[in-house]
Amino acid sequence: MNVDKNIKVIDLLQIIRESGDDFIINLNDAFRDIETTNQILLRNGVVILLCKSDGGVITINSKEYKLSKSCVIVLPSNHIINNINSLLMRESNAIAVSEDYILNMPSPIDTSIFGYSRYLSVIKIADDKFDDLQSYYRFIYKESKEESKYRLEIIQSIFYALILEILAEYEKVFEVGDSTSDIKANDLSDRFFRLLGANYKTNRSVKFYADKLNLTPKYLSTAIKRVTGRPILDWIHEAILIDAKMLLRTTDMTVQEISEQLNFSSPSAFVQFFKKHTGKTPRNL
Image (cartoon, rainbow, N blue to C red; front, side, top):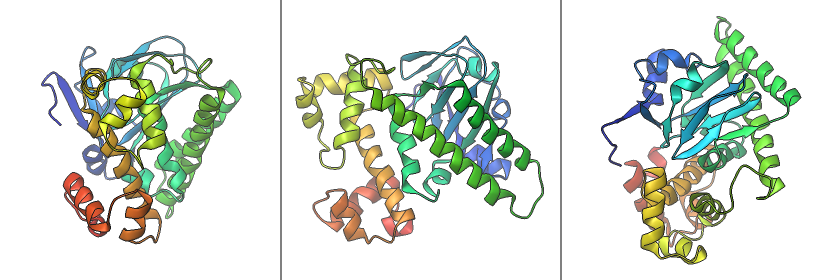
């Protein structure tokens, strides 16, 4: 993927490795030298922010979100973000981890965070539940300063609980339905990502999604590229790769079983697809 020279790329995995830890809590250090007007592109990680005050706006893939007290922000990889400084300067708690950190969580359900945040990055939650999330964060922050033998294991367990709580809040939003959720039914990119989430395992052609939306493949491709900055096939392939990596790391399934679950024509077709997009074979992941 070619990136516009005016967009600053932030490789979270590299920054996390340089920190000597499995996560980053002080994002001001990680995002230093970013001008207020700059756009950034996050790679190889996820940032979770807990907003504690009202006001401010953030734009993610051309979609504007108004920020408020007790909202959760999940910034996923490969999204173009404007006004990141408005987040860093406001009253909020934040933690960043690599994608692998989440993929290595105890349960595959954690990877749903990638799907939800891909097309809804900001959700408002009840104050009492927000207080619970704050408690998890404070525990993680406190433990990060300790030198205990099981420090990393304790932090991973608490972070796992935090992710599950956030997923539960996302599920509430999507159960409500289009009329009251933050997703606008007439927003083309949102409609595409909803279709993608439901069909990526069985349908990987742009034509399928264009037909479902009563559009030509060219029009849909152009629209998604304009809104997200990425080709539509990138999004389709990413959805498959996230599932593939999760199954390889969290299950004992064979390559053949995974290829069947993801509806590849054969194990060799799955291996070729995986190697083309990751540079590695499934078993060398």
